[in-house]
Length: 145
Image (cartoon, rainbow, N blue to C red; front, side, top):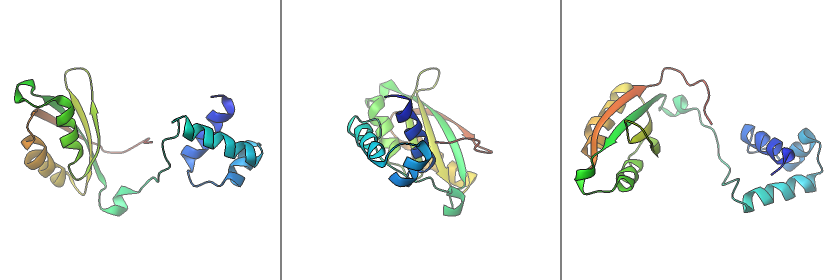
């Protein structure tokens, strides 16, 4: 991967729907070069897919929270299985197995703090292998990719 690939990725991150012609003009490269580089980045697994950025507040999910959870190794369930179970919950956007005092980091989007509370109390804490949780509500998102 070279500097041109990095510039191409940067433009695609800004607008994944940009046409090859637009990308060609912005980057000053021939369309065939842009097409070839995109195919190469996809084939190599650097680009995994193209996606959209949503305005979650317009979808009724304007409240974001990050939940830290500890894993209970005596539960008889693996930490990876606990993470997979959490990932299946509605409104869960991300689940990460992390290092440190906490074992899991969970990103949730919902309509309100009260709804996030219901997810934590009624669903997340009921999953076998979840020992404890701590919820942090986001006031403002400054940057998100």
